[in-house]
Amino acid sequence: MSIIYRPTGMAREYSPYACNLYIGCSHRCRYCYAPHTLQKSNADYFGIPEPRKDILKLLEADLKKNVYTEQILLSFVGDVYCDNADNSLTTREALKLLNGYGAPVAVLSKGGRKMLRDMDVFLQFEDRIAVGTTLTFLDEEKSKKWEPFASTPSERLETLKILHDSGIRTFASFEPTIEPDESIALIKKTLELDCVDHYKIGKLNNCGSADKWQDWAKYLVDCVELLRPTGKQVYYKFCLRKLAPNIELLPCEKNPDLYNVRITGDGNQISFL
Image (cartoon, rainbow, N blue to C red; front, side, top):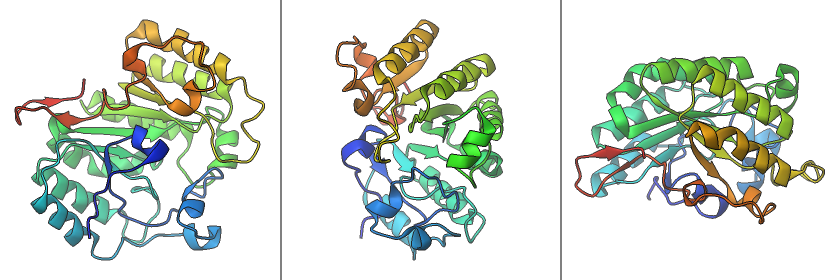
C-alpha cells in the first residue's frame, strides 16, 4: 500500500504528491470538503484524530522504494497540527523520515504556533521545505465563525513571520477566498509584515451558494494589481482564472508547479524557483 500518492483534480494544483498522516480534524471549518470526499458524516470526521494505522512504517516503505524529487504535501485530509491524539508526534516523526530520505516537502496548516514545535526539523531540510498556512479572514470574529477551532488570523500571521525570519520558505493559501475584501486586506498585511514568499490564490468552492454573489473577476484584478509589482511568487488557481478569462496573466502565474519545492535533475541542487 503506497501512502504517498498523486492527487488529482483541483488538489493536483497544490502539489504533485501528498501524504495524509491523520484522517479527521479538530478545526471544524465550515467549508471543509473532507467529510464529503471521504463519505463521512461531520460527527465521524471532526474530532480529535488518531494517526493512521502503521502510517510511519508505510511512509518509510514508500521512501525506501521510491526516490521523490517532487514536492510531497502534508496534507490534504486533516491538519497535521490540529489538536490530534498524539500532539502531532506523528507529524514530527514523519518529517524526520522525509528529511532523512532527502524528499522535498510542503506543510500546510492552520495550527498557528503549534507548527513552531518542529522548527528544528524544518531547518534541517534547508531548501527542501516550504511551510504555509491558509489565510481566509483578517477579521477574527469572521474567522471564528468559519474556522471555529483553528488558530486565529493574527496567530497564523505571527507564525508565518517567525518561520520566514528564521530562513524557512513560506507560502500562504488564499483558498478558500470567502470574502474578497478580507483576503485583499490579508494580502496587504502579509506584504507589510514581509512574511510570505509564495501565494496560492483561489476561491470558495463546493459550499452551496456562498460564492455566487462575489465579483471574482474584480478579485483577480485586485490581486494582480497588488502582488505583481512586488515580484512575489504567485499562482492563481484555475477555479478563479476560469471566471475571469479576459484577464491576462503571466505564464508564471498559471503554472502550478513552478514554485513547488523540488530537486533538480542533477540530484544535488535544490530549488524553490
